[in-house]
Every structure is written in structure tokens, then in C-alpha cells.
Image 1 (cartoon, rainbow, N blue to C red):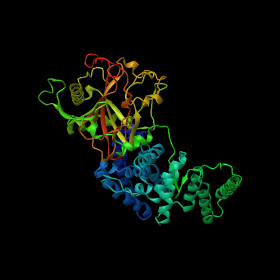
Image 2 (cartoon, helix red, strand yellow):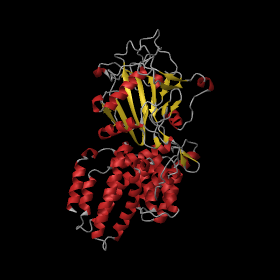
Image 3 (cartoon, rainbow, N blue to C red):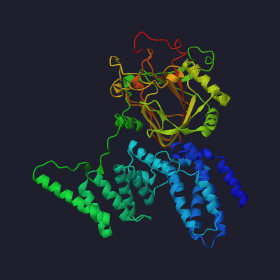
Image 4 (tube, rainbow, N blue to C red):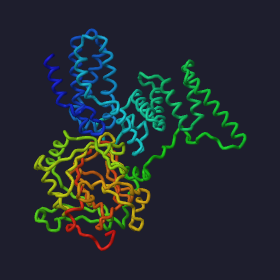
Length: 557
């Protein structure tokens, strides 16, 4: 037993990079949690063998976890492709196992506690559980999935079936409440109440559910329903002090509203409720939210028959590049203006697996550059982990870099390193530009530039000044996995949606030939609904490409 513990300890020490790793931001790294949980189950089973007669409850738990981990460990990425499985994995390791620890502590002779304590420092944190819950809510909003659908796990393309219990749904609602998100609090507490009313087993009580739900609907302005729910709560627990106080306050507000109506005065109560207890989703910071999310669902794509006629397929030899004459790449137009193309069979399965292998140990939470300070920081609107690979890391990196150079006709000498990204639960990158914005020029006339009128980055520092290579002239994006549902690359300004296809790549120019930014190229990576999304990309810069892509005759060529 001691040697096993020592081995486990050495294993954990070798994996210290996992600490504070923000697991929910990378499905690829979350697969390690499957094996960690399996190790915990094995440890638990050994402890049970020694304390069989005293620990019948713990033995039942172990058998349940053993069955679960046997299934998940056989295909970690496939299992975690279902976001409910990923959420429940994080929730188990952050919450449920700690509750089990308290039970085991009743008998201090156990060796299991030592094992769990060693592993626990590498568990997901409260931040991970919150991030995982918010990821499910993001998927719910983007793909218009009601809580019932999410709770039952009825998602497209899923290999595994998983559902949320009453307690899981309550955890979702509580997370939203703690974040001040009363809209999602109501949605999930209503689902919790529904499943509780249907007789599902639960540790939380109906009183606890009604306590959160009644106050959340009040915060959304539905005073009448808040009164109704609070009265229901008091009928179950007449001694509930907070509910009694809230009811008196709500009734006082209702009386004021009644008097105001008699006097023909405008009610001060917000009218945000819709019939049937359905509430409007609050507006947020993203102006094109509706357009962006519609494209993610495959709606609103502006591919007209007239535009379709301007799109073609061809063999591409890089303007007779010697490396491509014998084996040109298949090129397909995805959009005409701005011109976006897709290349097929850009990376082999072997190359993809090698690059993933190189990138995984280096994955760190992806950052964005603050437009005011120029400082790199993490942001909720970019949920993924990324790493940067250099050519000396492995010959495959150099080979892929040179292939992108041959295809584009641009030099990689001044390009950025190969960035590899793995998206986490509901992984996304909301609408953004790849290039560094300059002060908005109101005289610049081009289709789609209307976005720049409210995205005026006149105070933004030159993000790439320190590189000395100019702005990002072009983006080459490799799709290194298929995605069962979601995960499209969308361009809200002109209504294009490009779906991931393993081994293909898409390419577009971020700048006009004049060096001015093409604001139409504002794009986004949609949340991954089901699947594990891997991409890599190369950003080409202006310097070194002056003669490879010379200036045009006008400002917007």
C-alpha cells in the first residue's frame, strides 16, 4: 500500500502544471481528469476492502464511480464531447468527492484520505465548476436549447447519453444566482422544481428551490409570480423568516402598484415577464449578439444563388510554386468578397496527432489583448487553451509552416509561431479582429465597414509594434478535428459560416493591399456544442511580403 501511495505522489508531483489549470477551458486536458478519477476509485476500492463492514455506503459510491470511469476511460475525448458529462466530471471532482471525504473522516484509520488529499490539490477548482456551469448556459443560449433538453442530454451527435439530476440542476441555478444572473437562475430553478415535483431523488428540498426562484423572478420584475412562489414556500415552511419578510415587502410593492394604476400613473414595476413564466434574455455588451448566434446555428447565412455562382473549386499550385506543381492542393471558394478559401488535405492525421502531442503539455489559457492597455489578459469571451510551437520543436512543425508558405505565397520568416488551440466546454472566441486597429478613417468606403463606426479603436496601441513586423496581413486556420455540433467560424458582418472539417484549412486577408484593415473580417469561433475542437493557425505579417503582395491602385484593393 505504501509503495502505491509513493508512486501516486510521484505521479502527482510530475503533473504540477495542472494546478490552477482552468480545466474547463480545454477538453483535451480534461481527459486527464478521467484517469485521475479512475485512480481515486481504485484507491477507494482498496480502502473498502479493509473497512468492508463499516463502510457500506462508501462501497456503494465506489461501485457507482467504478462503472462510470470504466466507460469514460475507454474513450475520454468521446465521453467528454458531451458537455453534460464534462460538467458532471468537474462537479464531481470539485464538490461530490469532497462531500465523500467528510463521510470518510468519521473513521480516521483510513489510508484513502491520504490518497485523496494528495490528488485533491490537482482537482478542478470552484472557478472550474463555475466556468463549466456557465459553459452549459452559453450553449443553452447560443443554440436555443431549453433546460429540459440540456437536463435530459438530448444533444445532436452525442455518442454518450448523460442527464442532470435535481441536485445538478440546482447547482446550475445556484451558480447563476451567485453570478447575479437572475435570468438563468430562473430557468434552472424552474427545471429543478419540475424534476423535484416529478419525484426524482434529491438532497435539496423544495423550500430551498423556491427560496432562490422566488427572489430571482422578483429581480426580473415579475412581482406577481414572486408573491405566488413565496406564498408556496411559506406553506411548506411557515417559520421561514426571510420568506416572511420578502412576502410582506412584495405585497407592499403590489399595493403601491395597485394605487398607482388607480391614479393612472405609470407603474414602477418592470414589465419583463412574458406569459407562462418565460422571461426575456437581457441584452449584453456584444452589439451583433443575435446575428452571431444565428450564424452559429446555421441561420441567416447570406449565401444567395447569385453569390454561389461566383464561387468555384480548382487545383491550386501557388502560382506555379515548384513544390506544388506535381501535387497541387484542392482549393474551394467559401466567400467571394472578402475572398475566403478552403484548402483540402492540408495536414495528415499523423501530422495532426503529432502537433496535438507537442502542444498539449504547453497548453495555457488563451488570452486577448486589452484594446486600451495593450496588455494580454484572459477573458470570458475567449474560452480555450493555446500553445505556441517553434520549428525546432519537431520537424513536423517546420514542414507544416513551409506548406502554408507554399500555398499562400507569403513568407513565414516574419509570421508568428504556429499557434495550436483546443476549445473547452462551450469553447468559443466571440467576434474579434485578427489585425491591430488604427484610428477609424471615416472616408474609407467599403462594404461591411459599418462595424467600424461603433468599434472605434482610436485609443488602441499598436499591438504588434514590438515585433517590428507590421500588422497581421493574413490568417491561415487549420482545422485539426471534426466537431459533431457547433464550433463554426462565422463572419457576422457579411453572414458567412464555415464549418470545421478535419485536415482542411481556410485562408483570408485581414488587410487591404493598402495596409488598411478590412473590417469585414471581424469573425468568431462559435461555442462547441458537442465534440472536441482542435485548430492551429499562422498569422502572416506585412514585413517581408511587400513584393509578394504589393499595394493596389486604390485604398480598398
